[in-house]
Image 1 (cartoon, chains in turn orange, yellow):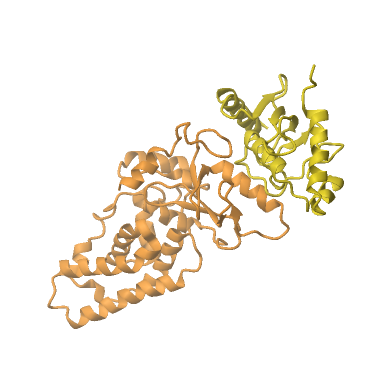
Image 2 (image 1 turned 90 degrees about the horizontal axis):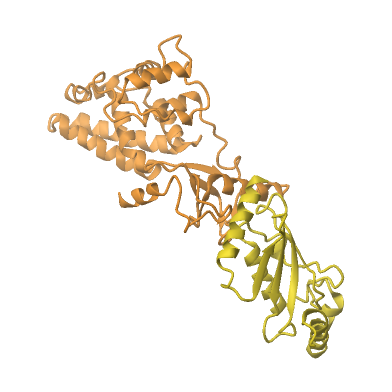
Length: 272
Length: 157
């Protein structure tokens, strides 16, 4: 995508012709206000929002852009080509939600290459043998955690309800006409339906989410068992292995894992 | 502290580079202290300040640009929004409406605009404000003109 490339090419530091309006230096860690999309250094704009909010006794939910005075509710930063992070001016207001270790582990899974576990869980067998006829009672909880992690929002009930509703009706239709379609057609239909349902909420991460959901269903495991397999493959959690250095050593031996460990501020031993 | 110094240095370089870009403003930094600046601004035309040159003093806080610089007139000026004795300026962008995207140069431009468009409803100089509010434009003009002649124009040989 052209747009992504042009944004990325300036992400480390912009040329002097377009400096940060606050420090007047090259922009460090591109950050955008969510409404007017004016660009600043992450530290500069966060400092400024803190100065503005500290002047008021009540919680502000927006700040004026230093350039155009548009009211903005959040700062968009950490854009990596497919996802971004958001700093809300009123941090209680939209984001009372703090990611747990389990959520962080799930997010890290999105930095592995697709097909990461395809040698362990056989997805095509899942469709061929029609394993989906056995209802998966863990799906809702799995969806909740996954979408919470991806959206960094606590209340995702409606979205979970929506996606699992789409999935259930797909299953019901399948029971009625299961003989007519090939397993491949079913898989395709599943992917199309779920990605349509999820895309408005998960945007660029939708395709990977659909893969992950398919993988979880195909595994036939409950969440704990599934996580254990995943974490073992990530290289972080044979029981007793807790330190991050060990995790890193493991990832070095496994070139398929892209270690984005800087996101995590704690040891990722994943005991929960 | 470091951030404000770095930013002021950037502004200093910009001022050096574009010295002639705006002939109405001459900004200069104190030789020994980058937090102290002075500016010479020309009174805008078609105002009683035309032909005068007014000196401004800037004291830049360590939190700059997150906090506005303190600016005052060193040259005496008769204007509703400038304190007649201290030279203090009543201008929203130097207080609540400050934005870190302003620079010392753009503050000078804002002050020139204020000279051309006084706000008599929030006066620091009540005599001047009252003249304007009561509609005595002529009285205001002659007072402002007189002080411009006395304080802001070079004495003729």
